[in-house]
Length: 138
Ligand SMILES: [Zn+2]
Image 1 (cartoon, rainbow, N blue to C red):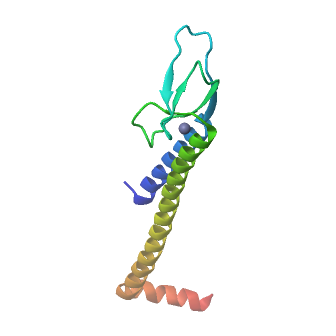
Image 2 (image 1 turned 45 degrees about the vertical axis):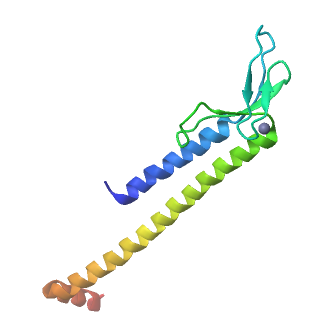
Image 3 (image 1 turned 120 degrees about the vertical axis):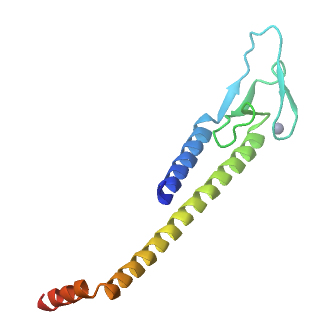
C-alpha cells in the first residue's frame, strides 16, 4: 500500500476517534425509579457514586482508540474533564505525529524525484539534447 495513503487512513481514524470522544462525553442523570440503587466507582478518583445519593454523573465513551473496558464513569466534571483532556491530548499528539510523518514523506519524495530527474538527464543524452534545443528556441 502507498505509504502516504496509509498515513491518511491513520489520520482519518484519529479524527473519528476524536469525534467519538467529544460527542460521547455526557452528563447523565441517575434514574430514580429503580427499586434497587446502583453504584459505580469513579474512574479517576475511585470515589463510590450511588444512585440513591447522587443525582448526576459524567460519562465518557470507549473509543476505537481505547477499546478495553466499558466506557468510563466519573463522580464529577472535574474528574471527567481530566480524563477527557488526557485522552484528547494523546489523540492530538498522535495527529501531530502523523502530519509530521506526512511532511517528511513529501520532502523525501521531492528529493527522490529531483534526483531521479537529474539521473535521467545525465544518462539519456539524446533526450536531454532535444529538450535543450526546445528550451533555447522558446
Ligand atoms: Zn472522581
